[in-house]
Image (cartoon, helix red, strand yellow):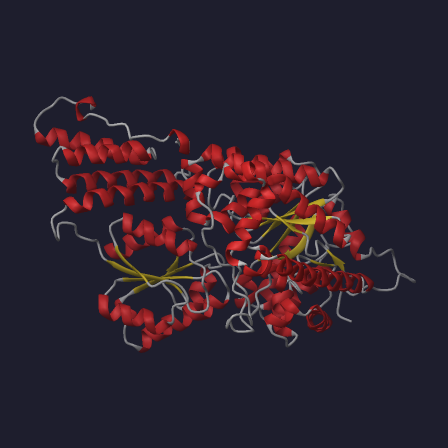
Length: 241
Length: 392
């Protein structure tokens, strides 16, 4: 970790696939080492090296979906380190940024429809509140995890969540808020869901500074995420449920 | 007057006044009872029947609303950070003006909210010292403050702020006459890193800068430090209150790792706190989000000189364990409890705080950050009553 100063930045160093210490054994062995290498570079937050490696591998004609797999493995390792309290939110954000930049390089090489999403999530900061830091972090991590995230922004009225839900069939609604007035907006959103006959078709998680179990009970949500990583965990649990 | 109001000493055992109580707690002593000093303005405006706009722009109205609140619900020993009358200042000193109730179409009774936008690029980190802090800060302010782009505009703004300062000073005098000590008044300060994250780079870019431009970020912090300390000094000199509010959230464990805290933030916290403490000014570290893993670092600050003010996210009981013999601890009745809980639950939590955190002194009861605008009045009453109901 540690950056290169602005004045010293130059052309990214290029690594050679031949540097990878595995016996060359045809395409299967090569892809496995590539996956591990990319995962390790991402997990170590080596931004320039990871992106350089991605470019190099794409140039070599390797399967871009395997690259995506390697990046997701790296994110899993980051998640593990976060759980173990080796990494904190800043490392999650940096890893997500590397992931995003790498995906941007890979996407033009993917065939249309090649990448599948795990599921659709709708997220937004509720009506009356414009705070979005936590929401943005959760949205980014969910995308890294493979979800199709529809971010409705801030100050979102209940009707907008409902409309998006009807259009997308999302399985998860994530509501964010930092002010205590957001508790009432969260409650109103959940009630509006029920009135629309959609409450049993979607899980609702809430999050934000003052949110706790009491707010879950008050609002009628299903759970709260104490941090962004837990929000991703909840999404995975509900998807698997 | 409400409960906890100052009583006559005649015929009673010695009862400390609010200032004695607060200063005893700050110095890690055990006062006659635990002092209470919440952030109350947003709530008292609503309870006292005025709008948020009125609270922020009219100190007299804010004071009347607060007096009604205290008379009805209970007295306090101290007023924490005071937002009353700060509307114009808030609109002026941030590079991106916050959403202010009653201004530019924002509803007059809505809580104000900070807007976070990027107003500097990483290339500027080294430029701050090159061109001078004052010039650089003015450049940033002028981006979104057209009134500061001309001398007449600056003069008008300065005069307006000066009038506000006088009104706030008058208010401070009034509360002291009523036996209530303004803890920090409007003496607001923060370490440069917090300001860079909140007001200049915005959060996500700041986080990436920790990895991409570490040396430049540290250099920028150092360049800004003297000016930021001077802001705190000016507040103290103007108000006569020898305590200063140092806000922190972006350098907490909710956002950065211990390694990053040690490398980037701790030196700034140490430098700023020791500067003030060394001059008899008490830094009140108002720490939102989770600081629990970083508690041991605060042992490096001078003992009995600083206040650790937590918002309900950090583990205040762990704070007592790690820092109880080193810093006055303040907090932390959670916002959610004050809004959604029952008075018995608030009473029970305050009881626990008073008897466990305050057991040997060095504790000031407070709200976890602000009492919510929509807190239940009976819950606020329970919190304020607890300090006379329970002795540690």
